[in-house]
Length: 88
View 1 (cartoon, rainbow, N blue to C red):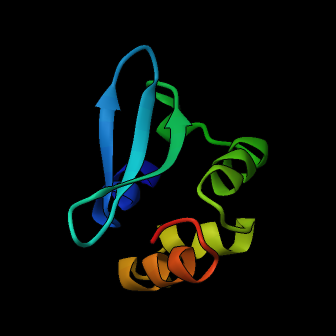
View 2: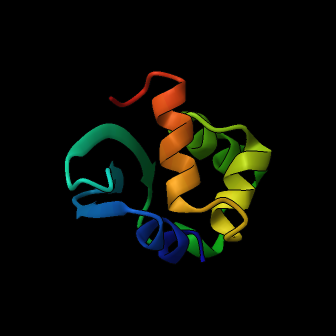
């Protein structure tokens, strides 16, 4: 569920020992904003891991849940990252 939601919101997966998800801006440029998820962890993400992922992509836990549940669009997320200076 989390993996699919991240992919729908502009994150691109790079597969290695762990799966990295880096946000690709709407203009196609890499942002440097990324989070990590172990293989197979999508089913077993607990509160602690969800909180870590949220912090890695500069969101509160509540905002991260909104991103995953489609209450926060990719446009909204990118606008927040621009406003807060994480991307240009």
